[in-house]
Image (spheres, rainbow, N blue to C red):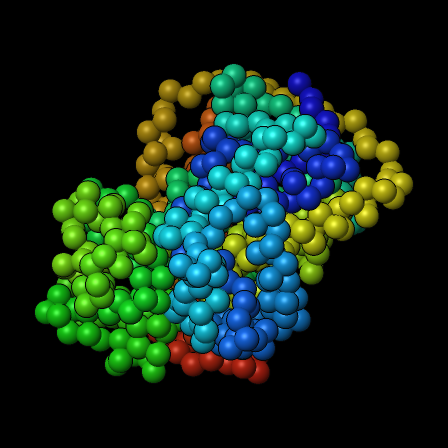
Length: 532
């Protein structure tokens, strides 16, 4: 089966939906998403979206905050581009129906988060992502030129080199092979422009606040197709994930610290003043390492986030979702500190793209967390991710519309998916076991604090697991679990290889063997590209 369109979008978070809406008036759009359309990391975003909005603030301050948080590795031209497009991005969201929180005088209720020097965070209480996703999904489903394919899992990119079985420089993307989970059939999706908006890769780690869909699919597919991958060593660990045996991946927003919450040890001692001048508003990499260190020094299972000194009614009104969720686990955040631990949260590396979101494969764009645009550098500033998603979606759409007007070479005939002699598996335990082993290996050896010895050990083990996965992949019919396992193994290898390449501690990459920053040799991207 083959489906063709002008634009093919893989992913239904803020970046994918904004792109689809931005091009749909000019062509047919196929949008595939591997769960229901609203099951995204965007939907789980609590804090908000950063954009300069007051006379007390300025683009220069936002740029400086971003550069400092990113350990001076961000591309300053990209930072300026994104920051200066921030107000327009907010207006686009409002035009699509997003309702941000307002104060009694009807002005927007801007908040502040760690690393920000001013209040510039637009939010919808503590469920900003849910509100953004709601509005964008409604607009997407209402557009006659957008066809949504839910429960469809991208398998691999289709490129001219793959189809013609010859070397093509630069290669061209022709579409994607996609598994229909309902039928088990692999469908060929062909398109003039393909956009990867598949999000991050938190599920590579044992502990993460990411949804189950975050398995690095776009990065793995792009790498296998020959695209350049950058800065994978910079995995951001969110400092404050709810610590409770029954809670799964629940993030306690950065905004709670932004509104005055204090991090404490189990004995009640506040400790962030010992780690950074901004104390509890320090950038996330510093806060995550501080919590990790304090837990190890004092033998605690977790740390505690204390906002009990704020008015109880204010807490319930400002953080209704967090309050109700904590209360469901027997924790009243108005009266007692919230037990928290760090967990894998946001990938600052990804598919290397230019200022238009274009990869080095013709006709292939990557936007949002799946990409490495140069905005985040070695550590993402809070609430810059949603901003990046919409700004690059709009820019990628603009470039795509220009490209689609140009004459393109005829598309070679694309083969349908060939299952060969593959059969149904009778050993699903292999998939489950390898999945668990990769994630534990990454958490123990490639986590918040690293060493050369641990990284080498992790790489050796992941490569052994990859051999088992490859054998399994080519002998059995594919399933969504097998596709995701293959992808997290690929992404795990990329993270480790990038981490081994960076011989310094910068931002989110902290290694005990190279404690100092090396601004002469290492203030640059780590790049990996598959050799054929």
